[in-house]
Image (cartoon, rainbow, N blue to C red):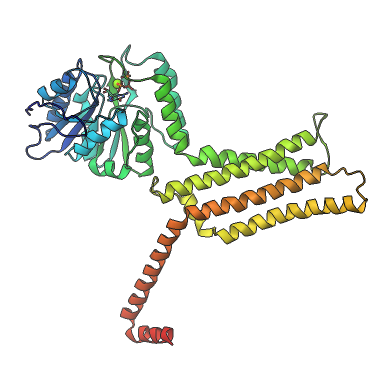
Length: 434
Ligand SMILES: Nc1nc2c(ncn2[C@@H]2O[C@H](COP(=O)(O)OP(=O)(O)OP(=O)(O)O)[C@@H](O)[C@H]2O)c(=O)[nH]1
Ligand SMILES: [Mg+2]
């Protein structure tokens, strides 16, 4: 494979020259590159060697992310096709690289010589066997001395991998490995869109959500050549933030449910009077806390359902069983009815207190417990009413889609019946017209 070198365009992502584009392309090795002149040449050489080992045809695509050194020229001189992404960011660089890739198998990895691209034949072999996504695992392979800082090896990576596995019910051994492979079709199905380092998390999460057939390969991880672009704290937080924002179940619904149940239980427990735990009196202060917890819980649940509805209707997630089931039973009217019941009950409790007070000619009133209970129910009623309106708004588009789908299905069913039993079909039609 040969390459010609020309000057990068002033802006926009564009392909430079290539010698790798001629003929069939099976494998595209894509590398993001930001000032990696010390290692990029070796990486391209190793990737070409890796492709040769598979016996297939391939190309190496280096996505230059605004390097100010000679990275782009060196990559091209070693036989890579260089594309340019002026918008900084690990995810941005990869997205531009994949967009221009021509192969049916995509292999990705850093341009800093930490990953051994000659091992890519193991990834491709698994893809050829029918796997759709292959993760290179450094923790199952060999991490050479000095390759990974202590903080990353024993805290950052294991903790982030553990959180990711828990939140998304996965069993990845190295969620932030930079060397992976997938089929072109799998890439399309993942709908990747993040721009920074969290791109690595997005791939793992979306691969799972898209139900890709996955496998892991143990790989070697070597000390980096050149300066690291990673900022441990900023990039670690971006991973964590991304995971939480993509998991409304854990961010909202689970804590919301815990708060609501504990809050309601506390309210019910303290409604008749003070209680004792290990000879300690628990009284009105705890009841106030319980009331606030119940309100916070209901709020978090409404927000969680709204977040899920938003993600579903905007197609961030391919499917969501919980929200689909929820909307099968939910309607604005039902929501408002529940709100009316809750709020109404609270109102009646408070009305009774008022009547008693009036009955005693505005005498001494000691009804803090039932008043707190009643007011909390009224608040919850209001919350359910407003929450139902928001959930109905979020469903407007989806509801129209459902209606169109069911009328199309009804028309199909009618046509099928008419075709199957012309006489019965005609009778049914006649009945409908009459
Ligand atoms: N972080 C970062 N990397 C970029 C960017 N653009 C391209 N890259 C490339 O993305 C790859 C990953 O960056 P690294 O600095 O190696 O990040 P890392 O592998 O998490 O950290 P190290 O363990 O220090 O290698 C490298 O090939 C970079 O050159 C960018 O804007 N930010
Ligand atoms: Mg690296």
